[in-house]
Image (cartoon, rainbow, N blue to C red):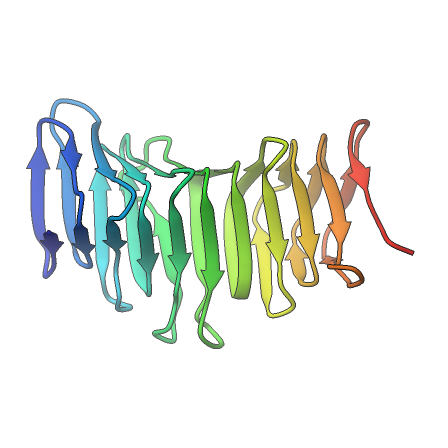
Length: 231
């Protein structure tokens, strides 16, 4: 078990493997001599800030989550060369329940990325329990982006791969600061997407037989894109 709280920190010159539990509620993990890998394999648990004041910073750390992870509130920083990947077996949840948002961002910003190959889920408890993945973090959804309840606001979002899915329930919503690029996969559900969408090679499938998917923004349907509707 690795536990970081009350501003504690760890510097590593090599890769880390946490096979059990990592509590990163208020602290820092830094890579020395370049970007270092932090792997949480299948069966492991990653807990990020659980309170509004919590700040967990990864500095030159490439986080690979193949287990289960969550954030309840506060801030996660991906500094310098840091990145986060939710692997094919991984599940990461915004379980916001502190009356204020949980957010990913950076202070010493390099070119941070958040890649979803598994499941990333927004499941806020109540009003204002939202999630943010702020710029310049580039989010690449190749798995399932599941908007169950409350809002997830992503500055820079693209969807890639034939099996990728973004699904929005009636109690959830998705927003982006920049145009969402849909290069493959499916957008579906009965909720709200507040974004301009550039559909290049994906499928937009409103509802869940039947239902209404609301897009509050401009929708561009390019050659190779599909709009699939039941009538």
